[in-house]
Amino acid sequence: MPTILVADDDDRDRNRIGAILERDPSITAIYAVDGAEALAQFETAKPDLVLTDLQMPIMNGVGLVHAVRQKCGSTPIVVMTSHGSQELAAEALAVGAASYVPKSEADYELLNTVQHVLTLSTRRAVAPLPVELKQIRRVYVIHNDSQLITSLVGHLQENLVQVGLCDESDQIRFGVAIEEALINAMIHGNLEIDSDLKEQDSAQFDSLVQQRRAEQPYKDRKIEVEIELSAKQATVTIGDQGLGFDPTTLPDPTDPENLEKISGRGVLLMRSFMDEVQFNESGNQVTLIKRKT
Image (cartoon, rainbow, N blue to C red; front, side):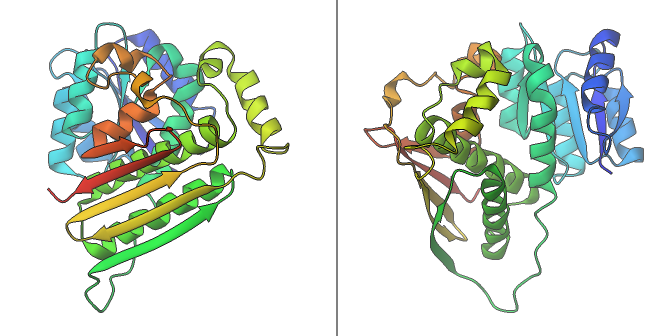
């Protein structure tokens, strides 16, 4: 039964966010009206995830992200963006937030994002090995199945623990980046579905995903994942069997205005959380590199 701490100074937004979270009966939401109150509640309630607005009095969302990271790096934080807060959102991702959701897309994106981040944050535990593990090299091939993607991401997070590459917070952010890359490979690569459809009609988008997972030529396409992990660096290469795209058309991750768009959100998170993100010329393979800090 996860507990979500929601911080937002706007009564209407707070109530709307609470109603969205309550669509999942397993979630318990608690509330704060600013960053300072949220930090006090964080220390007493020990929530499983913090969901925060960015523009708040006393302590804003960026200050809350930084304070929570200092107190408990294993608790994930998701920030909610709105018009005028994009630069704060970029700063929040830089200092430790695990993901973000535009408030304008909360009805469709919020609960899904919270559930995914919770899953990634609760799959970290792994028994320590009795020997020192120097390096891991593996190749995986998976079908177009979101559950397989979630399982593989959890497995890769466990590998990070085994080689001692990063702390708990960065394990979550690594998981978010890899999951976004795998989802892009499935949806935009193998199934050839444009993210613009998701913004226009989310129900039609979901229906087309299910349809193409069952029909040719899409259903037989695979995702190949090659990983190389050491105590100094993680390199993950993800390839799909779709038609590819022109990587030069990707949105600029340094432009805060892109935080208000659903299209390109995955690539923006990948580039925020990884040290390098490199696409091949045809756009059907991406290599993500994370170095030890």
